[in-house]
Image 1: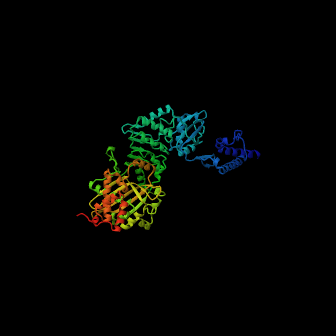
Image 2: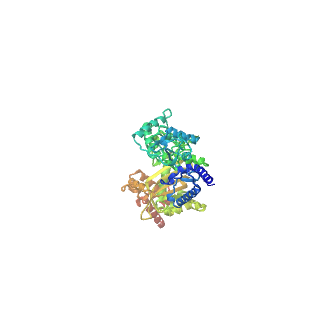
Image 3: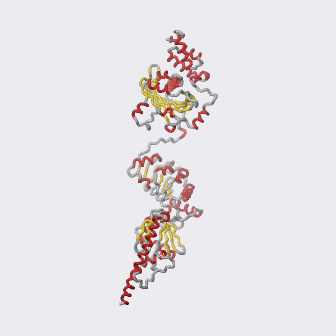
Length: 597
């Protein structure tokens, strides 16, 4: 009976040992160097089950400790499967190092063909296959391939009966860009260049059969990308087509060099990479591309249901683009000036009709003469009964333009319809009343520009810009303005039907330029100082306008208006005040109001 029981335990445990033989041999490193394991030929009654329990408890404690101590956790560990052996499933990384223990004993092709046969239909490209005195190793660039290779562990029997082991861990091959490396790059680039189409195909460059045995030419590494672009720029500066697909490109800032090295580049393919944001494309927006391929990048997933927005965002960066992701786009509407010499020079005064220019010139002279006077009520004659007026300021300088802010009619910032309506001035009296309440000014006429964009028999569209100075504060701050007038015929002259005023704060550079433009000794052409520039043609026009204005406001004829201004040394405000004083006293003769027929 004792012999039969001993025989039973011997056979039973031999079978259990055979089932777990692979597990014990494969993981003897967990047991320590001094642990010899079990002798598979000796009887071991009831030892195997208790060993499993103790080992599983050991693992539970180990991984529980790792969960409580995140810094020591293996971040590349995704799942652990318990069975006849430990199975590690790797996380998504870019590159992996594959180690084959004792793989140096076999030929390269035999090892790789054995792996490919077991993995079929999965395939892979081994990069930099090397052997050492203890193992063979190579690199792959995909986590699915790495998992498939890991699944081959201990499942392939070699010709000598050895079970092939496969070890996988994240890693990237080391490299050095030397002269030998660059020479090999030149050879590969020349093979990939098609002279007939002036095109270069660099797709999956790190998997090129001429490179993978000795080098890892991953173009997502900036140093390697720049080395390749330098070689291409030196030997193919007229390149028109470039394919950079499937190179794991994430940061494409270095592609800004394309605009410097390849001025004729028209077609660029950068699909199947890792570009995540549309703003990364700004690195290459200076390229004058006609075709672009981005499909396969994460950024395209953001536009799955917004194809029109996708096209719009790309067209903002490449206005001349005709083809996107293998799809023809509508013909772009662009203004392309071929000859820069044909661009007209900037002018202070732009007009197409000489008669309109003279009318606008006289009108503005008269308008700003009264605007800079102390009594702006005389502007009533300058506005139509149904005139409209609105004012805006530059929002970025709101703190410096605080005194204008409350009346600014910026429709992007005012959503209240009542406030919008209130800030729009309608009618002659409300318009002039509002302008009269604005700070006293002195406009610098030398800085004015004037554009007449439309002139017909019934209306004229005038835009004028320039600088003015606020006189009712100690600083006498300089402001920049843009005024747009729509004037219509009224009696013997013109009046304003619509006016828009925009005020902004000039930058430091503008103020510096203004100081250089207006020298201290140069008299500014202002109404109160017009007599100082008697030799200039412009001052004569100013004096003539002052006479006309004074005549209209006082009802005196031109002769007496001239006398009044000359006696007051062409100070308009003093001349008008003197007229009012003498008119109250009744000391102005009747012939002063007699008009010549």
